[in-house]
Each structure stands twice: as structure tokens, then as C-alpha cells.
Length: 324
Ligand code: BDR
Ligand code: CA
Image (cartoon, rainbow, N blue to C red; front, side):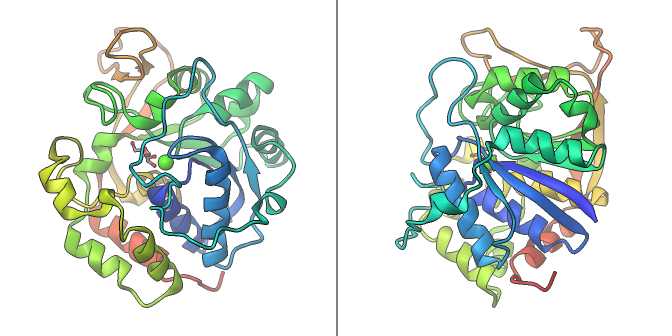
């Protein structure tokens, strides 16, 4: 089986992405590590536990990680997926959630799981990269022991979704994004914000997706019921500049690339750089297509996707629980 660790700031698109990995018969999730991002890390842990329980996969270990960025004060949480990250629709909160989270810190767990399975683990990062940056500081061999790394984050053309120039996951912790892209020399695949937006699906497809007759689909329908990120009208009228007119499940693009490489049909292979200074460019990703920076390590920046195949993976992911 393909061994995978998912690092997440579990908002609704992270939930969808986790379900995609859970549904893949050839994938074994070794653990899910949580980080702040869409909401506080405590909410993130609860959200992941909820997703696992809906998919009847409660045996997968969940670890609590960093609650803020490496440097500076955490930016206010966005309400993109509601204040709890899952659309503010869950009323029966799990009061026992803390007991269900492992005692081991997420960063220690990542290091342990990867060193127990050297060069076999794919790491998929769906939130700010703080846990990954801490992992390489604690264990410099961590990236070398990974099989590969899939990141949802960054941008290709200097146009951001939360600041003028930066994508959310990089903007929330630019130093960590910088460390990871400089120091993780394993094969690294990047699903940028533009990649996701350009390979979006129709709102008709979204309806078909959430109206499937299965617990996971009903759950997703509930999560997206009040959330403006899943409203066609909100996307088309107010946020067109940012999100475009399509249904875009950002984090699922990184998981899809990890579990089925044929979903990605075109990449740019080049070195990249994360801006740390700059009053408007902090957190921006720059692609060094001409090798001007003379860096020796390149990453694979995904540019085109087999949207039909991706859509199929989404459909399958909401037909859970499945027999794995
Ligand atoms: C990214 O930001 C988060 O809000 C989403 O979960 C995704 O990881 C998109 O910019
Ligand atoms: Ca995310």
C-alpha cells in the first residue's frame, strides 16, 4: 500500500481531500497531523476526528500540532469555511475529542512515522507548513527520509487570495513555507492556488457530488449548506476576482496528485522562492523559470489536470463509508 501522512488545517476542502485519501483502496494513512490555519488547531483536531468518524475510519491516529506560525503573531482566522472551519453547522460537539487525539505532538509523530518507514512515506500538506518546518529543525534527516511531498499552497503568478500577492497557506506562515521549499530536497509537487482555480469543476457537478446517496455525501452537503465558499452566487458576484465562477476544492488537488499521478497532465519543473520581505509581497511564491537564482533544487509546479479523472475521484470519495 501507498503510505501517506496528511498534515491539515481541516477546513471543508481539507475534509474533502482527507475523504479522497480515505476512499483510495491502495492508500494507507499512517496518521493525520493538525496545524492551525482555517481555524484554531483545537477545532482542526475536532474536525479531523469528525471526518474520520463519518467515514468509519476512527482507527486512524490524529495528532495535534502547531497553533501558530514560526515567527510573529498569528493572523486572524478567515471565516472562509466558517469560524469552526466546517461551515458552523455542527451542533453536537464532541466533548471527548481531547481524549481521542494522540498524546504525542504532531511534529514528533511525523518524524517517528517517517523514520520507521524510510523513503516510503508520501507527505501531503494542506495547511500552513509550520509542522513541516519544525520537523526539519528537530530532525534534519526528515526530508531525506520522505518518499515525496505534495503541497497545496503558493501561487504561480504573484496574485494572492488573501493578500495582494500571497496564497492563504503561505501567507499564514511565510517563514515555514520558505524553510520547507529551501530544505525539503525530496521530490516536491505543488498544487498552487491558480492550478486549483484553473482546473475547477462546474456547480452542476458540485450538486451531483453532494447529492449522492451515502453518509459522506450527506455530511458534505450539510457542511457546505451555509458556507459562502460553496455558493455559486457569492463566487460569481462578489469574489469573482479571487475565486472565479467554478467549484474549486483546493486541497483535494494535492491529494489527487499523490494518490493518482496520472491526474496531473502538465508540470513546470523549476526552482522556487518564497518572499519574506516586502510590504505587499510577503508570502508570495516566485517561480524561477530562468534559473536566475542559481538554486540546484527544483520542484514540480503542477499546471494542468485531467479534470474528468479528478472529478471521478471526488465522486468516489463521497460514496463512503467504503470497505477498505
Ligand atoms: C488554501 O487555504 C485554505 O483556506 C484551504 O483549506 C486551502 O488549503 C487555499 O488557499
Ligand atoms: Ca487547507
